[in-house]
Length: 161
Image (spheres, helix red, strand yellow):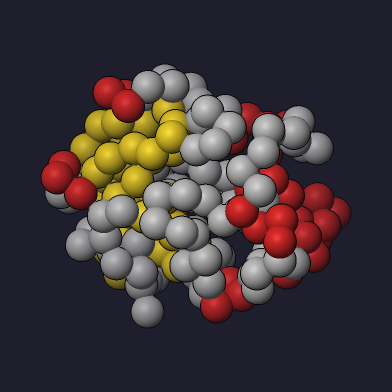
C-alpha cells in the first residue's frame, strides 16, 4: 500500500505536465520499483485487444490491462517525462512487426512510433499507448481522467469521455 500511495503522489505531478521536461525524451533511467521496471521493458510481441470495463469497451494489452492516451503528447512523440513514465509505462515492442491486433481492434489503426531514446512504442489511431501502474488487474480503470489529460482509448481510437 505504501508503494501505491507514493505512486499516487507522484502521479499528481504528471497530470498537468506542461513543464519544460515533459518532452525530454532522453535516455531511460532505471525504474525505482520492480513493477515499473518490468512494465516499461519491451518483452516481445504486444497484443492490443478490447475488453468491456466500467467505462465501456476500451483497448487493453495482452494481460487485459487498460490502455490510455496522454493528451499532452505531440502526435506520436511522447511528452511524458521519464518520471511520468514510471507511473504511466508505455506499451513498447522490440520491433515494429511485433504488434498484434487482437479481438475488437482495427488493425489499420494499430502502429508504432520510435522515440528519441530508440524505444519503439505502440500506437493506435496516432496515439501513443500507456498503461497505468495503479491498475493492478484486468478491467481496472483507475487512470481514467487523471489530471484531465489521461484517458482510456475506445476501439475507434478516441479518448473515453
